[in-house]
Amino acid sequence: MKPACSERQELSNRVVKATKAYGKATKRLQSIKPSELKKACLKADVARVEYELAINWLTSHIEQHGCGDSESPIDHTIENTAR
Ligand SMILES: [Zn+2]
Image (cartoon, rainbow, N blue to C red; front, side, top):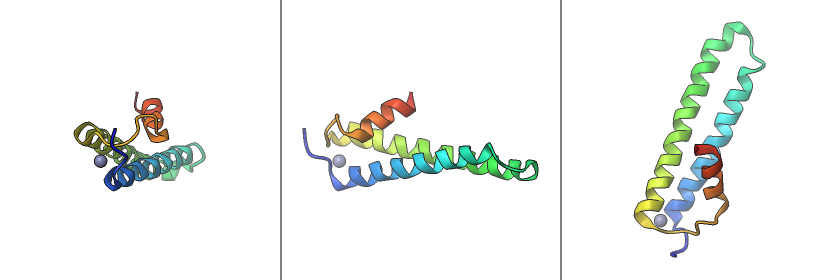
């Protein structure tokens, strides 16, 4: 298998960032004032969409380019979070 190319690494980093942002946004919902709930829900929803996009970009890159090691930590992250 080819080594992970720089584009894949970039996409992997994006997934990690999006996952963290999504986690943060959903965590925030648990301790928020009722008056801020609507805005915070919207933010969490945007974070979720960004996370899903990042996963999809990375997945289709891997399918099309076939680069990288399938045992890399990011693939396990995808397996554990996307299903
Ligand atoms: Zn690649």
